[in-house]
Image 1 (spheres, helix red, strand yellow):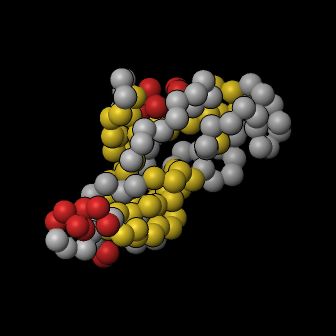
Image 2 (cartoon, rainbow, N blue to C red):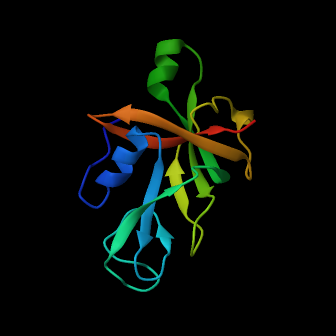
Amino acid sequence: MPDPVVAPVNEGMWRAAADGRLDVQRCSGCGAHRYPPTDGCYRCSCLEWEWSTLPGTGTVYTYTWIPDTTRTADLGREVRYNVAIVTLDGTEGEPVRVLSNVVDALELGDLDVGQAVEPAFIPFGTNLALPCFRRRL
């Protein structure tokens, strides 16, 4: 997979992940957390914001399994990866949901809606990481 696009509006999130933190934007006007990073607040239209560190825990809101044809061909058996939407704990405003991957869920029975997850950070680039999750068992 290609590295995510790093831009001024999202760079803080990638750098925080490299330091082992899950940071999302928080509106300076009304206090609402938001993801993905944007220039303006969905709730009050304020253009001022800051990075806010969350616990990183959450629950699986929904997920799907995607066939990984490259690894299937290499390994000679069917391989899939998951794409999960995780509702984050500790946010203000509308629920904050992150599109991500649960890195230790490898088989079809490994994920459930409502399952508790915790942060897992996957390095990319220089001093950057992708915020992902692992199951809290």
